[in-house]
Image (cartoon, helix red, strand yellow):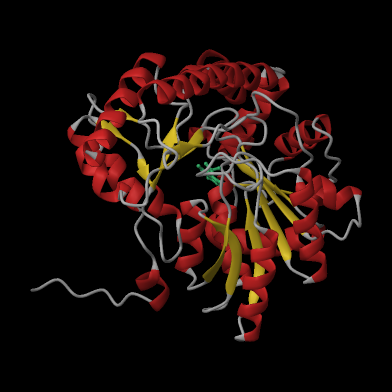
Length: 409
Ligand SMILES: Cc1ncc(COP(=O)(O)O)c(C=O)c1O
């Protein structure tokens, strides 16, 4: 008998496979130097300490770790996270906190809770692909606000113009999604002025503002800027902001644990949404991280990670200066933190097409077009500097520069 044709929902039909994940499969060949993935450096993982913490879980809490847990998260990790936040100047109460199966789960719950098909989210143009995919999966749309090396966050005049035009056409805008600290994909960090301006906009328009902060702690130079969540708590305290955090970039993405901060009624709604997704985040993993945090080594690891990334970022910038063609229409961001920089090419070049030539030369990146919800621009690339060794960075930049020079010739 022939296999049946599955009758997928309209939502399922509107889901789009990530081009990045497909391309990354190609780049996993051992001889390719990949600047493609958003992978932390494996040498930052505190393997021995994590192993010892997992053993302590079996010795001290085996039954609790192997049992179902509460949806909001295990008490031990919740307490550790509230203390961690307080040590970073964020005073949240237990009812402001929900533990998630890493930030991507929160990014999926957002459109699930807020969007009806055809509703809109305000986001950067470009923005994080995983957020775009989640919004697409619930048939939402993105009102993209230009955002690039020439400004320090959203172009606020464009935000006003595009928002007013969309409202006039009857668009239902439900929330704003931003990554103010070392954005994925550009590496740009917003100034305090832009953070305050966007917060004011969200108050005026009564819009929830989602601040996704996976890279916030990975600042290796420059002055720290308060998070929008902090500004919201300190200022009008209107509770407009939902802040997403994760262990993925400060410890290890394999932990798949994140947390969100928001006002209690919003947290409550997310608890309900999470129940039908996974009942609870793995209790074993939560207790493992609580044990690890109790040993007091997390800050040390984050400090070491910053130092390693600062060195890699510095070396990559040096190599770009050295090998890239010196032209006004080729430029790159110089991030003060995070894992990525954004390279802009002359408008005559198409980074999607160049990727095949780059792979032939055994170097890979993610084409900038992947980070646009609609009407992509093709003359940019996201380059990761955290994962490769210094030697690979030197060789990879040389190969990438030769691809670009050949395309220009
Ligand atoms: C901006 C942004 N948000 C969320 C995520 C997903 O993080 P997690 O591993 O916590 O699911 C990533 C991962 O790269 C990211 O760059």
